[in-house]
Image (cartoon, rainbow over all chains, first blue to last red; front, top):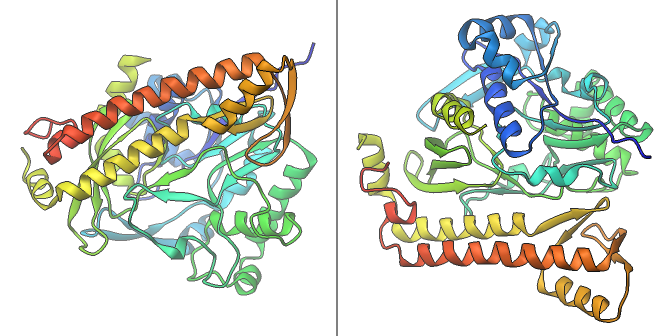
Length: 301
Length: 119
């Protein structure tokens, strides 16, 4: 009889001075349990983020959400150098460290045969990602995305530069343990270790290191320098901007969102987002509805 | 009602909200009409349903179908057909019910299924 593969989710949660990524990971873990029915959840964090979470959330809640914690040390030099502008709508912008350097270790850290690597702010509001398990493809990630304000376009998100390769989103990555995916992640590490060279070669803008860039470059190289060579996930990636906000969580799969009008910054329309997974870029917005979302999920588990 | 919400509702254009909400419904429907089996992924549509019905009528037990990645996937025809047909009706019935509700909504808060206080 064929042995069932072990399957699980891996997320990375490293807080900075303002954003409690670990809390987002806890909320998302409970959403994953609720909607995907998966309890194999690994969160990679650091001692400071974890101890803050123990104080603020309590160990019981953390244990009920996450069954495998991996605590690693941060690269402090990288943290101080990789600074990004985070927005809490157009009204507030802050420069904060963006600690994302160890995502390329997901292959080594994942204890599962099949893994879905997720951003903590990719809220699981449906069971769509269950379609990945047992898939013929060894690795899948999205280059196709859709803003949830459907007539709002940002072409800078399509490619690494206007004449460059297609940008893949490292927000959701499905992979199986295999020689091919191991090489893929080794290549991501190689890009991360040679940022200046690859930034020059692929001409990505600015000085910020993003996993979207290194995963896109690895996808390009691994496909024999062919664009879009790594297959898409069986689902479209739906996203918001950090200029958007959340009004409230109606239930464990429905959000009322403020979406900023494209030609009128600071003005919003409202939308109801229901039953489809969503990448929420405004981290403060998730934190603001975190308590009501926790109540919804805990009541319905 | 909070001032922010009041302002947002004021700024909200009914038509924009309605169009966006309809697009959201279509997105949800598309997502639910995706079906993965035997390592492949299929988009459930009338073409796939009709082709499978043809295979069932021709008494085929198994068949190779091309999935959304154009990879060949072997399926057992009858259970596959029954599954996609059932999913198709389940999803489109929900879509119809939600769409009708939206079509009748004449105010932003009704489009969003909220009361006038935005709750």
